[in-house]
Length: 300
Image (cartoon, rainbow, N blue to C red; front, side, top):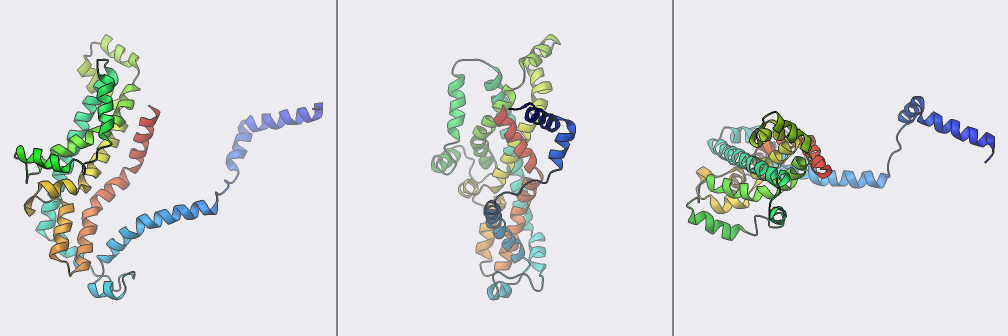
């Protein structure tokens, strides 16, 4: 390499490493990806959004409009379907049951999962690895597989046709995911912080409340959101446990409402839209926190 070319290469490298060079790189327009990639992404987005839009818009139509033009827009817009559902005591009763079950399950999953994860992440004892592997194995056994023996246990405990009989199994089946997510968060807390807290006179329980919970808050929020949405959308367990319509949650209420108003498709779509709306809004608001919590768990 000649001296001239070497000097030009060094000058260009220095320019690119300088603040002005980095500023020029940032100012350059970003290259678009492959059109095929965007087409596939838009295709997946359409597949996910289209059924939701059809259900929501279908609630603003009449049965004759749905029969005449199934894929058309409301013309004219009909608001009476949503108004009838919102003024129904049945809908609000099932809504209240879903809130009770979702909040109770979320609270149990977060509290118990945080305690178990703290022990697994910060303590050394025999069979620690086996216990963690047991929780990890719980991810491979969904609720549907164990529904029959689970129903027998709930029946023997006398918890059938009660909201508590739905909350307890949901807590048990929500713990594996919670432990897998929270253990890396708690394990990543430096030991120096715990030693400094001990020097200041903090007990292990005080360290847990004052340091562990605030530092692991992103993971706690993540598992709480996942637990709430999973509990809200759960259908199989309430179907087996709950018998009386007074205890129905919204997923069961949608089924009962669809059977009762099988000829009124527009009203059924309106009821379905309102039933799925809380979970959809909840997930949309906290979507970034879910991604951030899962990213922190992977890094930990």
